[in-house]
Image 1 (tube, helix red, strand yellow):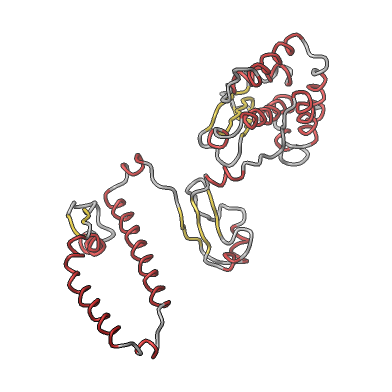
Image 2 (cartoon, one colour; image 1 turned 45 degrees about the horizontal axis):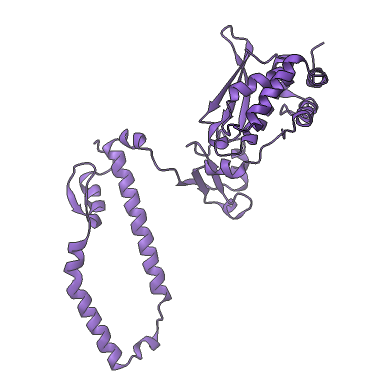
Length: 332
């Protein structure tokens, strides 16, 4: 009969009292690494993993488990995967920790996350693929909680089921889409979809059908991260021109809206005409002064260069130039 997570957890817990000679030596090294006078806040996860393997996991994790940092893991602090080996069998285990989420967190968060994923790795070895299903569907069933509680009590750790790095996770969700339907007024999401990857909402999302039935709105991208230098250099001249035109259009639209708002805030009606003669003359003088200064304002306007043909012009002329000389559809 296959071993269950709970049975495997009890087997590991039984080795914690009393500790063997190897376990005692490993525990001493861990205390020195984490709590010594010269303890490094940026711990070596490979060294720690090997020591925890000896103390808590019956020395079963190495060499089958590969431990590494991941720069692309931004939605969770760590992950443990059961993957195929060279013979097509699920016998390899990959344990990854999120570099973006953990690099600025306290040392204890890295240690607790490493132990959390190591528990998954231990169950993958002892119960195979059955652990990924588990009695709760997430791999955090009674067996996981039993072993995590024993490790917490033994080493004064804080291994939990879920992390609380919500602010860090949200900071990496820089691709944002807004729905124009009724759901934009409903909490808790208000029609927003935030993702760390540039993957627009689509039929592949599990909630897409329900959203189409209950809201029916369309998603439009409203925010994205700035391009890196490498990404910008790889763009074609036409793509660069398109981004430049969009920025100028957005700038012009914002300024027009601000101007209209100021005009709406100004008092209107018959009362505006009840001005003293001195105010009228002052207004005329200001208006004449502004007219006289128009050439100077134009001469001070910043010039820009077309990103396609390198033609120099005033910033206010760039949109018309792009539309007439480089309309959409032409190749750069």
